[in-house]
Amino acid sequence: MEPLLKEAALLNKKAAFRKEKGLFVAEGLNLCEEAPPERIRALFYTDAFAAEHPAFFRERAGMRAAGVPFLRVPENDFLRASDTRTPQGVMALVSCFRYDADQLLCRENGLFLILETLQDPGNLGTILRSAEAAGVTAVFIGAGSADIYNPKTVRATMGALFRVPFIENVCVPDVVRMLGARGIKTCAAALQGSVPYDSVDYTGPSAFLIGNESAGLTEESIALSDQAVRIPMQGKVESLNAGVAAALLVFEAERQRRAERAPGN
Image 1: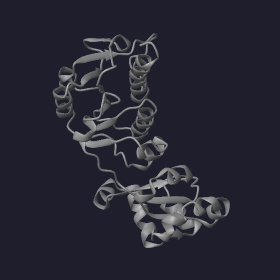
Image 2: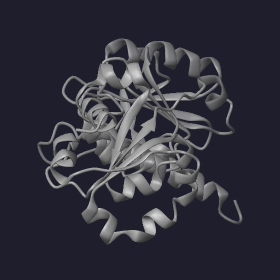
Image 3: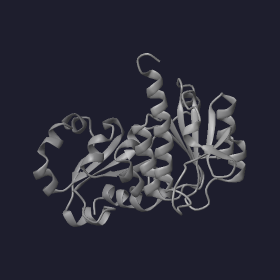
């Protein structure tokens, strides 16, 4: 197997290797099209993919001319390196992102998500996708959460990974204190001491805390927050999926802000 493709296979499997190399794998046509060209370090493809998508290569002629390796690999080798059962025949090595928290917090009327030990890669990816759709400024990912560069997370973001800023491995209580010191309202998704989520004003700088899929938020994080909010539910359901809860909260904030921007307000 081609040495760079072996590296891609290891990056798909090992979080420590991704951290060491500062690289992750974006696999599939959609992700390879959406990955910022300046961050792509190598691209792998099969004969079948090349035959089916000639425009993909024409549109990236500049990358090739700039020296980015475009490597044609045998189908069997590609399958061994892939993290999917039915690969599309294209993957890229992409450099990891680095964001400055101070710069993100200085953005006007920011809307933030803080995730505490969210452990399901699919949930994390879905939340990033919802965050982009609702206009979230940035996502803070607590220590002990799923790896943002896990292949399942990357696929679940549907490209939002390339557009939504995020800070990894944060201490959630420290982030809550930092946001509070900057006048950003922090709202914890919790049952205890909470009010209905749609009874709170999110038109100013705001942040939502989402907890672990089974245990929820820690008592410390809830206590540090300005307000605990709950999503009223019927039936015997005790809680919603973390991704669903996060989407409801950020879209309520987006709805309020959109209403405030409407003509006549």
